[in-house]
Amino acid sequence: MNGKYGNRGIQPPSGKGGRRLQELQGIVDISEERFWGNTTEESLAVESSFDDFPDEGELEITMVEALKRPKFRYRIHFGSYSVEIHEDVMIKYRMIKGAAFAKSDLEEIIAADERQRSYGDALVYLSRKPRTAYEIALRLGEKGWSEETVSDVLNRLKQERLIDDAAYAQEWAKQRVGSRGKGKLWVRHELRQKGIAKPLIEEALGEVSEEDEYNSALQLGVKKWRSTTGELMDRKRKTGAFLMRRGYSGGLVSKVIRELAQQEGQENTEEWEEE
Image 1 (tube, helix red, strand yellow):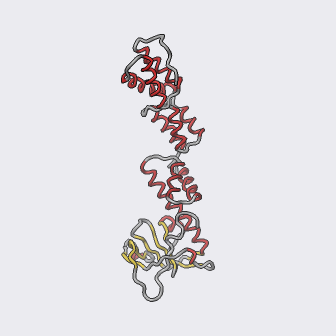
Image 2: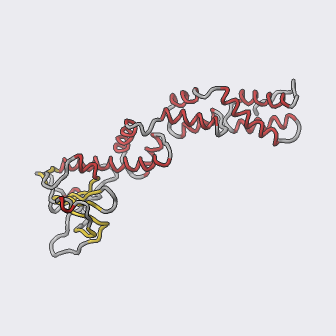
Image 3: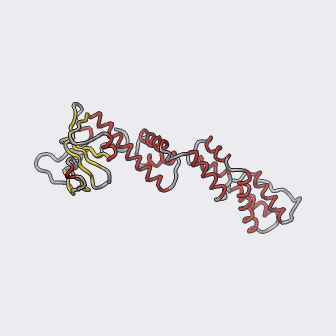
């Protein structure tokens, strides 16, 4: 199997000779209704691999155990073999006592479990703040999930409208220009780093009016202008360079500098030029 899940979670019980009960995080047999809701602190378990499962025939579920930790995880026993599965996957495939599955069926189930676990990782990452599809893909890749699994998770998140790069880009551009004092050139660079597609970037920047960007630059320019000293051209250069570093275009910066000079009664003076 590809992906993060690998061979983890596949465990046959102890062999002959009465091996000791190994301490786990807490599991309970829920195959019978009378055991539902309870937990035990011990279970039989020895590490193994999914490759140990027989290739031919079907395996019947002999017991279903709920793990105390992590939450929503279950160990499904097939006689001398077992596999750990998320609750949602267990319900989807109706993994109850007496049900039988071939090894190929279990491969599909484990792949579904990988997707469910990586989906959970994505939700945790999204819970902190909105993310782009690229950022989530990087995060899941860092956690070891396969490209196929990551792609499936991204498609699910898009279908559920939990990620939307177009909406993200528009909101980002609006806030960065309007509230953070950044020019469109700066914002364009930021969105590229976040993996937003070029058409979506240009569309988002197009939603920010020239007037809004000018007012943002002018507000910053006034503060910088008042804090500078020296000859008029020195003040122009310092203020202009400051605004350029914030991502405003040369044309827009020149317009702001003219306005600042006029406010001090400095008309018909030498124009500021981008260095």
